Each structure stands twice: as structure tokens, then as C-alpha cells.
Image (cartoon, rainbow, N blue to C red; front, side, top):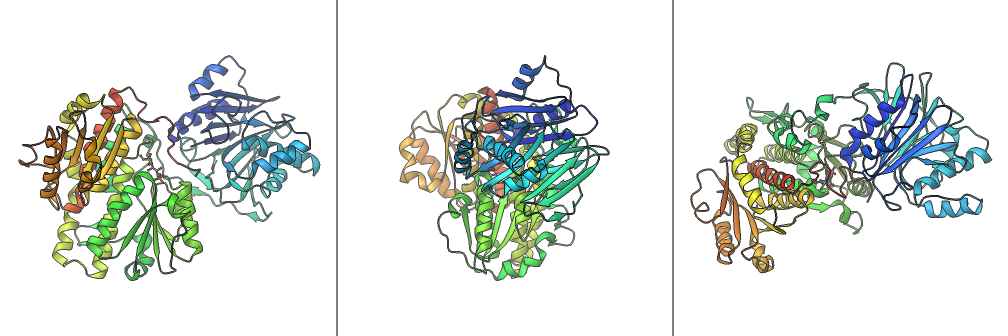
Length: 612
Ligand code: M6R
């Protein structure tokens, strides 16, 4: 969603800010803006892309060594130039950028209006800007103090950076519920909503905690307080991010690069955890919680979108291998439906970004009831990783394409390791069966590599079906979540309506949709309910539907029935999702490219959904 970048130091700020905004484009946005402070405080904004902002300001004097910049994903007020950030305060002394939502903005705005403030935009952000100005004037305090006092009146989530034309050496930054990271250079400072705009300048960073305010001054001082006025010592950490991970590396799109990274990202998720030589699995991050997990009467999984699909695979794995009951919940539903949560429940929160607002709220709810919370996150140091009692990182590397690909397979890999570890501890698998699965998991990266070679047939299918209006994805058992994920991938990047169903549910409704126009993707690999799925394929063929089937290499039965087949290597049933997902990602990608869609930044979508 919205993105923040700010700079203070001896260098020209504009190139750093505009480059930073481009790095943040992957988060999804609809307008962009920048404020530069030289002899005056100038704000420039544009609806649309960062390149639109560049066009607007190309003939302007953009000199200045301190500035703030923002990409906005509209929440309050339509996406237009007026509502874009930064927002000036009424006197134009202050400019502010903001990620998050100020929930009590309406009452604050009313109060400020009664004191003569006039608002130009419909945003909650402009309200906060004027509140800070009002406090600064009436309480006669400096900007740091005015921001601190103002934030005590705010209900909601925020990451903000503020500058004042009367203090040209200072940035004030603060966060609650929305991430903010401060980069410490040799003689300068960077602030951003995630590390991507910072990594090319410095690896030394401080992550602000909730309700912390930072005063960042040009003369190399960084002061942090809580909004309750307690001083904090900045804790400097090293970024593990590499710049090359943020570049396309010769691929046309980040999504394609990330699809092709999967043999490596899956291996990275297993590194140091799967010991094929010793025949063991260890998950260091949750080692202290293993007893809790194996004695839990149930495990709850909370997640959204693709991460929820991974959670569903996790449910099948943990129940199948370790015989512990698992319930998988949409975090957005869980948080509002008064769920029954016991103190001895273990909740696993899954999130690529680690910033998803609904998942964070579900965690807080479960925590308040005394449950143990474990996290499976990709982004190191993210809010969810920090809010959980313990957890394991997926180590898939930065995922820039909005459509999640390598994060999904890394999550499933980690859940497979977890299920195996729990099975080992509980003794629910024989030693030989345990080793069989473990050794096969170890071979999965090579099999993913092989699966990635199925390009010719995938592009043929994409060419054939790129103009259809609907798609159906069907699978059973472990392949049901794969069907859901395949459908989500297609709809989010190609805008073709697609639905995923358990194949047997087809008879209970979706079968009515099937005619000669309808492509139906079956995940029909050779284990589990294969015979049943074959019957489902027959039912579709009988109604003249077009069948695209993902089959195990060497399959002859489905091959004889389907219009198109994509072969994947033979593997254990519970590991099929790691392979079958790959051609579905590629199919979505090629269809979207052929339709001329913006694959990496699909319309209306954001990479991390930091508002509910
Ligand atoms: O960062 P998270 O994994 O918590 O994000 C959850 C969903 O927003 C995300 O998976 C979304 O569905 C993706 N666009 C899927 O490709």
C-alpha cells in the first residue's frame, strides 16, 4: 500500500527520493508526491505513477538536501492530486506524509474546523498535519514535541514523516501499526516504509517500534522517545537485503523472475532445517514451542489471500502427518466473529509481508486470550514477526511482484518441515516413511527446476484461452488449495474471472457453468483421489467443457481425455502443491502478458495490505 521515503544529509535529496519512490512502486499506489525544503518548503503531487510526478516537476528547481516523498493508495478520499501526500498544514509551515488510517479523524477535523482551520482535501492525513501545527502554536513547543503530543490524541495506525520550513535540519518520524525504518548513513539519514529504498545507501538500520517518535537531525543525532515521553536507545541492526534482489535481473517482470527463483527460494527455506544426511528436521525459531505444539488440542492458522492458501496446505499436512487438528481461518473473519480461543491454543500466523492489518489484528486478539502465537513470515523484522512469540522466516527473499509466487512455495515448504518435525516428535510416522518424505522434500528444488521447463505447452494454452471471460480450477485433497491459488493468481493479474473449487463440489453448483466456452483446469496428479478426479474430468467433457490438466509425468488416462496436459514430475502426494503450483503461476503470467496487463502492479491491488 502507501510508501514512504525521506532523506536528510549533505546530498541532494531529490534523486534519492524519486529513486526511493520507484523502489516502492511494487507496493501498489494511485498517486505520488514529494516535498523539498530549501529556502522554502515546496510540495509537488500527481495523480498516477511516479513517472507522472516526474513529468510535472521536470522544469522545477528541485534543489534541497532534506525532503519527504510518498506513494498513496487511496483510503479517505478519491485518488487525485489534492488528496495525494505530502499535505501542508494551513500556514504551509509543515508538510507530512502518512501511511495508515487515523480512525478518529472526523472528530479531530470538526474540532480544528471550529478553531478556524480550513481543509483542502478529504484525507485523514491533512487533519493530523493541522493538529500538529495547532499544538505547535498553542503549546509553543518544537516540532518533535508537537508530533509527540498530537499522536497521543490519535486513534488508528500511522507511519509518518514530518518536516517544517522553520527547522530545515530535522525530520520527525513516528509509527504505530505501520512499519517505518530509519537508515543510518555515514553522514546522513534515510527513512522508509520498508528497507527497499534504503539498501543501496546503507545496511545500518533502526526499526521504530509502535508508538515511538524519532527526531532525526542533520548533525548526526537520532533521538527516539515513546509518545508517552520515555527516551529509548536506538537499536541498530544490519540489513540482510541485497540490491540485486530488488532488480529484474534480465527478466521482463519481477513476477517471472520470482517464478524462476523458486528452485533456490525453496532450497533457502529448507537450508539449515532439513538435514538429509542426518535424517532430521529442525526449526530453530520455534524450538522452545515444540512441546506446546505437540500437546495442543488444536492449531489455528490465521492468514489472508495466498498465505491463507498455504495455511490450507498446512492443515492437510499437519493433520495427515502429525495428527494434530488444525483450523484455518481468514484473519479478517476471525478478528470479528467472536471466535473461541483457549489459552492452550497455538496460533500460526502466515504472512509474506508481515504487515497485513487483518492478520496482525487476529494475532492481537488471540494474544489477548492467552494463546501462543507463532509466525511464518518472509519479511525479516516485519510487524507480524515482531508481534508473535516466536516463528520461522521463510527466507524466500524480497518478493516485488504483487502476485505472490515464491513466497507461497516457501510457506508450503516451511509448513511441510513443521508437519514433519511434529510427526517426528509425536511418533505418528514410521521412521522409514518419515525418511522417505524427508528425502523427497530434499529433491523438490530439482523437480521444481524440471517443472519450470514446461513452457511451450503453457504458452500454447495461454494463447488459446487468453480472451475467455471465465476459468474454473478444480482439485481434491492437497490439490484443492492449489486450485484456489491458481484461480487467485489468474484473476488478480489478468482480470479474468476465475474460481477454485474442490473437484467434487462441482456437481453442487459450478457444473451449471460448464459449456464449450468454459476452460476447466484440473490438478489431476496420480495419487490420493486420482480416480475420482478422472470421473470429474469425464463429467466436464460430457458437457463439452475444455479441460486443461496438470498430470504426473507418464499419465495416459487423463492424457486421453483432456484437451491440454501439463506434465509435472512424480512426487509424494503431500508435496504435489510445490510442483503443481508452478505451471499455474506461469499460465496466469502468460495470459496476463498477452492481455497487456500490468503484471507486477495489477490494478487496485497492493503488495502489503496495511489497512483493513
Ligand atoms: O503479505 P501477506 O502474505 O500477509 O498478504 C496476504 C495477501 O494480501 C496476499 O497473499 C495477496 O492475496 C496476494 N496478492 C496474492 O498474490
